[in-house]
Amino acid sequence: MHDLRAISALFQMRADFVEAQAFGSGHINDTYCAWYDQAGLPIRYIHQRINSQVFTNAVHVMENVSRVTRHALDRLLADGHPEAHRRTLTCIPALDGKPYAIDKDGNLWRTYPFIERARGYDEVESNEQAYQAARAFGEFQKLTADLGGERLHETIPDFHNTPQRLIHLETAIQRDSAGRAAALQAEIAFARARAADCSRVTDLLASGEIPERVTHNDTKLNNVLLDETTAEGICVIDLDTTMPGCALYDFGDMVRTAAPTTREDDTELQEIGVRLDRFESLVRGYLSTATFLNQAERDNLAFSGKLLTLECGIRFLTDYLNGDTYFKIKRPHHNLDRCRNQFAFVRALEANMEAMEQIVAKVER
Ligand code: ADP
Ligand code: GN1
Ligand code: MG
Image (cartoon, rainbow, N blue to C red; front, side, top):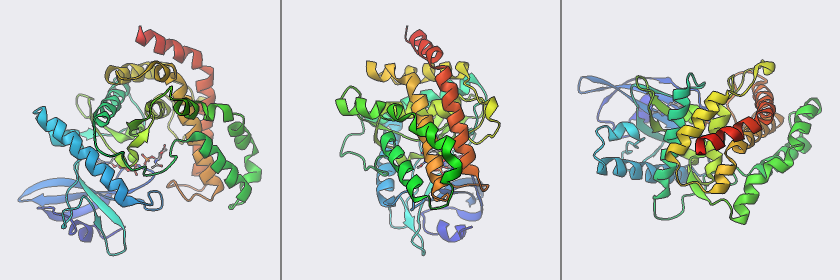
């Protein structure tokens, strides 16, 4: 646990620090929720330490985040939105005015107001939630489309370059630094057998049939906060990977996290299936705001869920082979469990691909 009182002192809080606890179930950053007393009123903030092993240029991350959130706020204020500061993350400035602060150990921290009366879900509970989440991520893509200015930094190069992810897997197999490869022949064969799937979207991007867009790139369900009473998708969070990408990466990751019958790390593999009703809600929600998609993007909406699930499974497998250096784990074989779960969901998606294509066609009619 870091000294959150000391971290708090690096920012222009205008409130008195009371206490802080670790918060959320993200796999990457260290997130804390801190209570403050603001002239007699209890109020919460999020303090987050950026994972500098994952984001090697954390200043670039914050330059992107501060541009995107500033743009979002300007738009909301221009529209006269009554709760503009609840609809976008906003960076609390550090003492020097920057949107981040560096602590005595060289860690980079940022602070956001805590978005109240809303929450992120690790598992979808209703079709309405799926619809709202997809709608909000579509709206977010619309917002970033007119950002203007220079191209955003690529905070993790080749983040969703799936063929590259497969190459990293092969490297990890060869190195076998944790001595685990021999026991993973079934998982390795599963990934290798799907090499052609891995390059489908990168090929469409290379040929120009699918355009590059500014996308969120980490649209898992718990990265959008839904209003506790109305379920409306109110604030997209975790903007570290917002950068040039492909709309299908965002839709695909929603399918990966909102359409399975189980959670990302459940080990009851025989129970993993596709909730087609959830899938339909995602398509409806996303297309209600992502009205800018071209035909090639629309044609690959169903496939994108399989691609992103396969890619994520490959990443968990690679990390397991490397000795669990990237994703936070809570038990010894967590990454292997996650990989098996993702590959089981890939199989379920394959079995349901035709039904999903039909749903997309039905919604588009
Ligand atoms: P990670 O990259 O580790 O997933 P996130 O930025 O997604 O980090 O934050 C982790 C969790 O903290 C989120 O899933 C969400 O529950 C919570 N969280 C983050 N920012 C806020 C905020 N401003 N208000 C409320 N909850 C937040
Ligand atoms: C990580 O940061 P978080 O927990 O929202 C990861 C995503 C993976 C996801 C798998 C920067 O997301 O790419 O899809 O875990 N984020 C990064 O659950 O690698
Ligand atoms: Mg997150």
